Image (tube, rainbow, N blue to C red; front, side):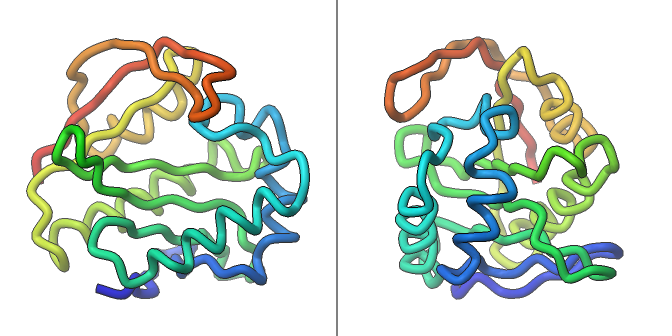
Length: 175
């Protein structure tokens, strides 16, 4: 299924596109504090962001990857992204999200995640999701907990580059 446009009270969730690269790079993908606990490394040049967006565009009609940009309705500003991707190793969809620092703590990520979960359940018939967060980033865990995710276990995860490892907490949501 092609990733559709979704809406919440404050947001339009839309597929990301290559034209978003400059804004994303300047706004969050190059910000070490914002990407600190992500599995991917901070983007050091716009090419990193463009390569990621090209991969996202290729996956638009995939049944295994749904990613949205979070756009504020009142300003039209793209402020973050999130979605879920099928993890073949665990045979389940993993949810993830990122938002610009100045929007932390305002409930915006929770609002987006709630709508993404509803789409997964109601439109795709997905029966369960899992998510994880670095223990040192409890605010990300609260996003999951607010949506009913239940703690499962602790373990370590590494950035894709292997440059850093984190203690993390994993959560599960039965839909």
